[in-house]
Image 1 (cartoon, protein in one colour):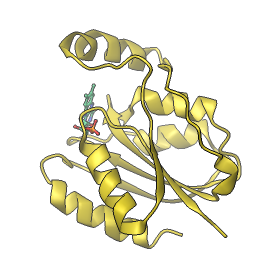
Image 2 (cartoon, protein in one colour):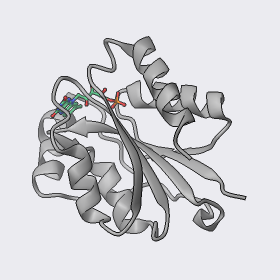
Image 3 (tube, rainbow, N blue to C red):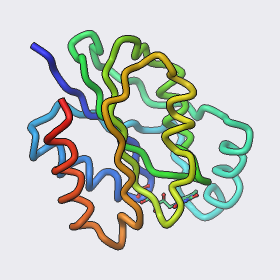
Length: 157
Ligand SMILES: Cc1cc2nc3c(=O)[nH]c(=O)nc-3n(C[C@H](O)[C@H](O)[C@H](O)COP(=O)(O)O)c2cc1C
C-alpha cells in the first residue's frame, strides 16, 4: 500500500502547528526534524542562523529513526529563512535517501517566501513533485492557513 509520511522542521512553532493539524486530519505518520544543538535565542538568531544560511551549512540533526522504504509519498513542511528553506532542511536533504519518492512541499513564511521551492528542487531534481503550497503570513493567519493546508493535502496522493 502506498503510504505518506509528513516531515517538518519548525523554529518558532508555526510550521509545527500546521503540521500537527495536518497529521491529525489525515492520520499521517510524521516526524519533526530536530537539531542536535538548538538555534534558539537572540544571539543565535542574529549571528548563527545568518552564518548557516549564507554559507549553506548543514546543522546536525538528531537521529531520524524512520524506515523510508515504507513510504512512497513524502510531504515536507518548512519555514522560510532568508527567502529559502531553513538550514535544517538542507541537512535532511543531504542525509536522507529520497530517491523515487513523490514529494509535496509546503512552507510557512512571512511576506516573502522567495525561491524556497526552486531551491529545494534544485537539490533533489530527480524526484516527482506533486504539488507545492506557500502559506504566506502563516503566523498571522494561522487558522486560515490550517484550512488551506488541509484542503491542499487532501487532494495530493
Ligand atoms: C531567521 C529567520 C529568517 C526568516 N526569513 C524570512 C524570509 O526571508 N521571508 C519570509 O517571508 N519570512 C521569513 N521568516 C519568517 C518565517 O518564515 C515565518 O515566521 C514562519 O512562519 C516561521 O515558521 P516556524 O514558526 O515554524 O519556524 C524568517 C524567520 C526567521 C526566524
